[in-house]
Length: 240
Length: 372
Image (cartoon, rainbow over all chains, first blue to last red; front, side, top):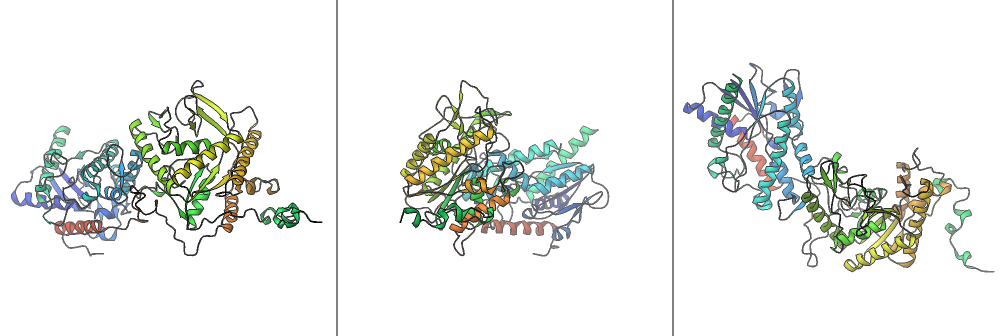
């Protein structure tokens, strides 16, 4: 089974985890995974692709240096994993900068309605959802790979506070989960064991760079590659 | 022989001001009573008031917006969700009674019995039922948003130096239980109309005057120097609940509002009247500024009205285009919000995060991308 994973910078730890598993002989034999970056998350809110017949042509010049089309030319993947639709950082940060909050969180912040928040999420994911819709229209099978949750030293935590950060992230993911469910796109989630009791990611999965407060490390990447392999095998078994 | 008319300026005489003039050449509509330049200005009222707010904002006045649209909500959706229409998200305030009760609710002096209307499986706020395109998911969400809104409305009235209010209607639907004034008839945008619970009332001149006097007195309890600019909406009634023909009902409604506004100006130094109603509807204007439906005011009409207003209130040179939602926090306003930035330029943390994203991509996929 051939699986292509494309995504934002959270694809980095997936790639590094995959390389480690490959070096250790820890990859599942029946599943072939390749990981490609699209580009940094803050650029994904702008148009970065165009329909091009049987594929999506990447139009952002910088993105194109690494990946010019989805799927790449060659054998068609059995499934494409998108590591882009669940990263809430852009919207969460905007909420913090403007001191906004949602009903039910409590604490400071001007409230916006759930409907307004949903529109903010959909605007944030507009290009990515449109890409997903296009790939689905090409009869490509999609799934979503969840990025890590937030770590306790996330740079915007002091501004937002832990409860608001986690609740906004959950609300963001809930909006996207509903959108993906409408499209019958499954999600490979981060295992619950990766989170502490409050809902923050365990520091064991924190990026190796001390200054990086939001990416996972290669352990996290390897763990998620294992999750993807398990999901793919289960899916293949259920189909057979 | 002398008499008082000899001292009157030319604008006081029909012959020199109106007769024989092209409607667009009629001048001297308005002489301001006080300056607004440099003052914190807030707006509310019926839909025509939106034009005033938009023009004040666009021309660089210190226009207050205590509930600005979130950065990240697309521009095309902002008005649909009640942002940017007025100085707060109160929606259209058609009557003096509504305005008075808004301030009373913000001050915690009035809590209407009917807290919500059901609509399409959700709920709406009876006092701004068309605020958002979809109903709220729960009563708790709607009430939390209303509480948050009223806190900001109170800050608005505490801090505004000039409040521009457009009187729109006299016809009003009230709760029989407590007199709560709804902007729309129950059942039209949510809720269920029940004659046992809801009553129609057409406000009289005395009632409009009394409601506005009560509003002004209450506003000056928390903001002694607040000034008021009144206008009357030139837009006719869409429908009447009286037995009268709609144009006849419109004439009564507008006459009542115009008379009440005139009385308020006569009674208070700090109240001005701007004649947008007359500029659009005066008989010698020949309906020139109405659209084909004889109800909507054309963009040309709005532009003409605004040119008259801003001839008297020219914005200061170099006026900025952005006004913080509240004045800077001070000792008297410990709960004031920090001013928002006009644009969300990336902060230090955001920039650092973007660098980390690039570094993570380089680390995993190699140095084949040029830094921008």
